[in-house]
Length: 164
Image (cartoon, rainbow, N blue to C red):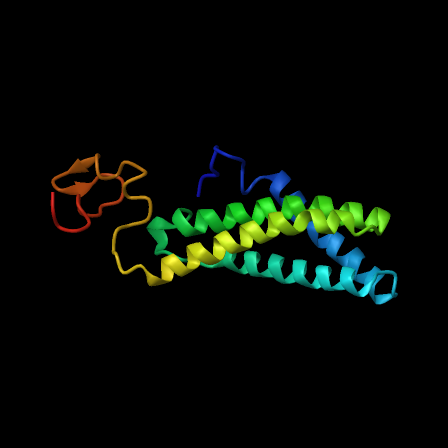
């Protein structure tokens, strides 16, 4: 799959570096927590951040659509939420590891809460949506590019509802 060129490159080296930095920050922070260098509240925040990271990683790793529709819709959203959360976690965990102050962790809470909540809503809507329209059918312009009643790009019917 070709890497997207908009917003930021989800599959590029900077995204991978942010995820590795996040995991290293988690490792160092958990080592500090194991040696009682953190408070109970800091440890609770680290546990919460770990759960959020693994939830977003799981969502980004799942295949939500069939092969020809991969990388769009909910899959694209989950990947974007994961990378943005990794940037946030990498920065906050790096500052936390360097200073042992709680402020970097508290600053990350609203950002991570936003991405987690948005992802939960998107998943809920996806699971309760009975429509068979392919993901991004209208926003990609597939319905405009048709040949003999079928989309040139996807091969899906011109109108997903059988109407014109």
